[in-house]
Length: 446
Image (cartoon, rainbow, N blue to C red):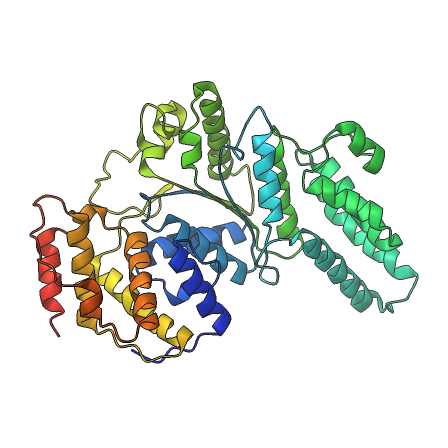
């Protein structure tokens, strides 16, 4: 395998995150294996969004299958392609709808995590607005031959700003959205920080009452639990108008909607999800992508899952001629299967290299050791279907750390002598059975 050259900050993020069993925010491309078809399908969606379309994808897979990893990797790809992105995990406090402001809490989280290629860790709201205004100033100076200190420059920039905001006034809530953007510009022009901050607070959904918003910004509405999603449709239009490709929302842990015990509240959240689905599928949203991560149970349980809501079930269920053994990457649901044993072995090889590079030593584990480690994991869990990528990675990082910190201990000593127990028949995943694993292991007798 070729020598790796990865910056220390990336190896640090990878080693720390994987040891803790969480998805790294950066460096994912260094450990990505498999998922080519899934990534290609989402990149095609991105192309459509950049052209003014919209997309909605439910990414499903059981715990540890790589949903969050895929969402994070796509998020990073999107920023590299000049999209604005925002991500949030749903929780009991953050839903799509709620009687205690849980929907607004999701909007606020997404706005806090608003990111671009130059601001990948969130907090990109004001930099986006500043970049927009700076771009208009540059454009005005070039087209009109104006100097930076020319008194005519603000008037020319203002003309361009109102050209954009006027186009948005015809959209739902567009008039007030445009008015707040203009308020931000006036604060910027007059160096009035209070006015700028009031506009940013409104855009982040932080005003509690309409009275407060009217007093500070002369705007009679606020972003609330009922209308927050409409404002993301405005954000997607706005970002596209000012030079980005569009806006992508990544909403993970949607299983928290499934866990809502009150059936009316649960159905209300599913109804909001239906609205998002319909808007993106029917062309009512532009330059907007919505990617939702959840478990198969969250989708397919006919008592409490999305399939309990007939309007969603009829839209999401497999078509008449779709068969479960055939993959479909173009539908609204992207079903993640577990990684194959071959893919997990490649992942372990990558982790072996990254760990050695990060701590500055020569990797001593052989490929035979890695295959042996996989066999041990399968045997310990007792059934191949329980072997998740997350489990394997966390255990493998533990092995690497232990061997590195105890140089006198060998891999054989660490794992100890063990009898290989035959796997129970019929417990394999769709992609690999116990017999398949035996064949695979035989192929790697190096």
